[in-house]
Length: 253
Image (spheres, rainbow, N blue to C red):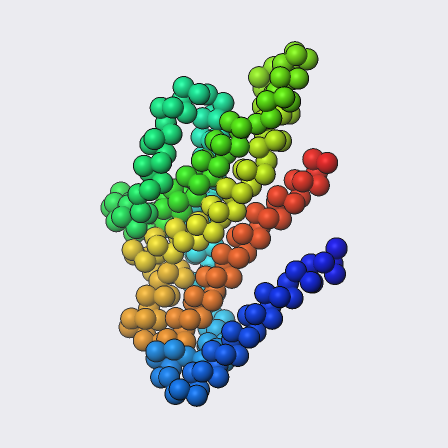
């Protein structure tokens, strides 16, 4: 299994190294100013400096806290809404159009309104993160629960299973893959939601650091270092969902 994972990671890693080397060489050959496009070596050095002087950690911690709280709230609400609509055809017909409309509304357009309601503090960022997490998970859960294995459900009905037992023993296990597919999408979007919220106001966070780096500090290497940290956070959120998915797969075997 370990060797298979190494083989799977080898190609993306080789491509990343090739792209970084090409970037480094091209910037130096064409003498691109660092304020326009710094070389990867300068970005890595600035990333290390930001961690050593505490800048990155000071802005990372609020973002992680908002991400965890907003992701948990939005994920729980999305799961509950998706299961409820998946079980009820009448509720699904009434609510589905509103879910689609809400999902198609840009979160950046709702951001100022949420800041007006909740203020410029962490509550607005958590609300934005929860909203952007809720809809993809709700829709994925709705479809997965609705399309559960009819044969298995019919078998459980014939055995006298209650609706609760059919949900816990048939619908949710068969909907597991669809639910986690939505959760993986929601996890990466949650990071986007938090960063968008921090752009709209606040005193600390990776979104704030982006604004500072491109604005008053005019520190392009720091801007790229903040983008790198945001990417790491997004990959970590995706990996956390993947870990839970694999863990539940082993526990339910």
